[in-house]
Image (cartoon, rainbow, N blue to C red):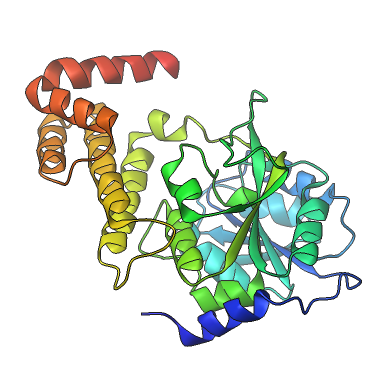
Length: 333
């Protein structure tokens, strides 16, 4: 059911009320779990931003067992450090936003970093386009490769959920986000059921409620997690389960969403079963992988490639899963 306050707020953002002459304050929220080796790089990139109105930088330690807290408190005393028992990145981000005072919220994962113009450019987009609630930017991999597969060649374009959900690498985590704080709260924040993939669920809800999402075409973030799911099967499994949950939520929607059809949602759901089967095989759970592949084949037909891969996995599980796992290990040496 639509949140009436959120819908009204979305409508207010679709009419220019914000003066471009004002300088909005920005709060930066960084969830951190056992991030002692990377949090310094992330924070250094925040304090190197060219935008002058960063109202605060909030690090939410999510029950780290390493010396993340000591690194932040000793090397960056200007940071507002919050702590919570381990509850996942979604809960940490929600907690950070609940304590933030900025009009705009920018997220950064503790293992990523921003380029110096990131905040300045995204603030300019949201100031110039009051109808946009969320601004995404492009990202670079650690090797310097641009990760976005854009919906258009324009430097600034409006994104639909189809662009974000159906295109590989259509968005790259929350480190490319800047969102209006009021809208974040009205939408309900991140789904804490999801230990991974919370960004997908949030984007579905924010677009369903009519909020505008803008894509800024230049890469302004460096993302270090491209191969993380392949190197860490547990993370891969959590991510696949989160996307399964999201796809099932799409199918349970009360009304068709203009950004995604029921058929597309069903195809995504089958894709996630295929992905989860491959993750289970990579972890060595062949029985679980085969069971998930069988479940996927019982769902409505999806993309041709997913259909072929599920069929091969079901009929020739040892060959298919063995070859794929070997290739993943070779690519991630």
